[in-house]
Picture 1: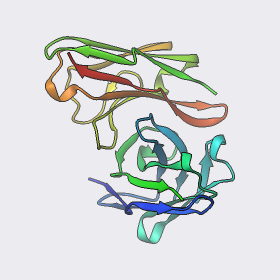
Picture 2: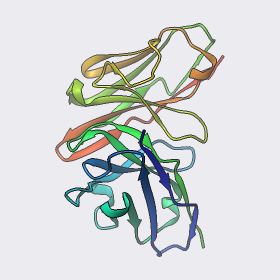
Picture 3: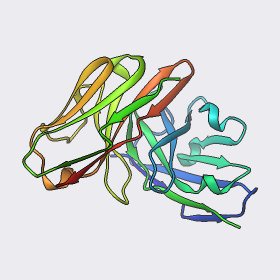
Picture 4: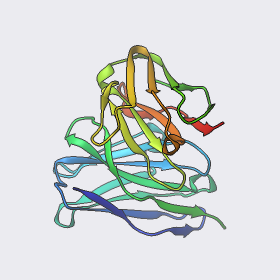
Length: 121
Length: 110
C-alpha cells in the first residue's frame, strides 16, 4: 500500500520561492504520475501540474506555467514542487497525489497529507 | 478549457436520506475521464468514483455515479453520519491536457 508523506508547513515572504517534497513509500514510484493540487483556505481544489518520474516529463496547468517547477528523484522516490514569485494568494494547502495507474491521465489515489504554505510579509 | 459546475452549492439532508449531487461540464466529457472525490475537514480528498460510475477500492456500495456527455451525478443512497463532507467532481481534458475540478458541493446535516 503506497503512502505519500509531504514535508512540513512553510512560512514565506512575498516574492520568494517554496519547495515542497512528497516521498512515496510502500509501492511503485517511477511509472506512476505524481500530481500537485492546491487548496486555498475555504476554497476548492486546483490542479497545478504533474510529473512522470520514469520519464522526467512534467505537464503544468497554464495558470502556473513559468512559476511552478515539478521534479522527481527516482533514487529516493520523492517528488518536488517549487513555486516561485510567491504572493499572498498562494497561501494554501498543497497536496501531492499519485495516479491510480501507470502513465497516462488517471485518477488520484492516494494523496499526501498536505503541506500548508503561508505567504506573509 | 472545460469548466465543471457543481450543484447545489450546499445540500442539507438527514441521515438515512438519499443525496443527489450534480456536476455539469461546459463541453462534452468522456465518461472515462470523470471522477468524484470526498473531502472531510482537515483531510486530503479521497477518491470515490472514477470513469463516471466505477467505485474505487473500499468505497461502500451506497455511493454510485452516473451520467454522460455534460451531465454527471453522484448519488448516495442512504446517508450515514460519516458521509457529511464536501464532494468534488474532476475531469481530464485534452485541449489543453489538464485536470479540472468542480467548485464542490457541501453536504451538511439538516
